[in-house]
Image (cartoon, rainbow, N blue to C red; front, top):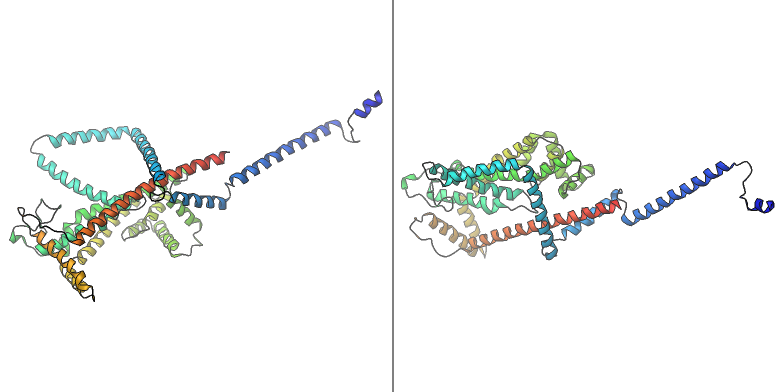
Length: 433
């Protein structure tokens, strides 16, 4: 019996005690568990992709960006409209919460608006001043709004200088040379331009005279474009202070540009680096230089200033001076010189000198200029001439098409923004698995 028990007992090699063998067995089991955990983790990483691998992340960002860019009305109309409405609801909720957190300021503004409304409707001697302020305020707000639409983005800016401000300056220039005056009667100016009735009101027309006539609306439009440059600045500044990754592709491109600054070879990348270096190293004067010329890369200047925590008034002050004063006067001079009387006549004559098709092209331009001259000399009790020139018809249709395209770009941009929210949510869920 004792021999059987001895055979059933576990074999212990000589020189190894019992406690050491138990410890060795425990460590082997623990190492086996670690290996199993590492194997499961490796399998999961192979399934989900390595989120710490830069090449994997860049490839995933590229695929996600391509997927978002395919969400447009002419490709996926139902999904685009659905995402647009969902993004609109999210934005309305966020704005409502922000207003609720600043309810004291909102209440003060509502009280001020109520006082102004009472003063507007109560009869009295102050009404003439109220009407004057109302007219100037609405006129300035109109051009500031157009300036904001021109530069704020939302997928693409509405080129309001070419559609509104440029034609307005051109019409004032043509009218000034035709009427020999800029004292157009109000009303109908600024809705319509009519030469003054007083023949003795003629004056010498110079560049400075016309510049002074359109200075208010031009400066307000320039101020609007400066306000429209603030969102990239605030986005980059908030991202730098909080350390969070912003929901903006332009900022991601900016960070990639900083990472690969030394290897940039193409012209676009070098131009962006030049703007970034100018703004970063020169400061106020660099921002002023970028804002004072037509610069499609100025969004990069706003992102650079926000990323490097340039003070707000340094950025906005230089942008406002550059866009509303310097750049605006350059653009005004160009339009006024281009549409001065002798330049226009020379341009029309040059069109007529084109072989074969010159006379047929020259005729509608001559008819258009002649109709504009007749409108300038219409009296208030005279009906406007009937008929429409094909140039004015084509310009009106161009305005409609560009406004329609701007609306479509807003819808596509907001839908793609919601798609990015969905992609980021999926990515965060995959990381936690």
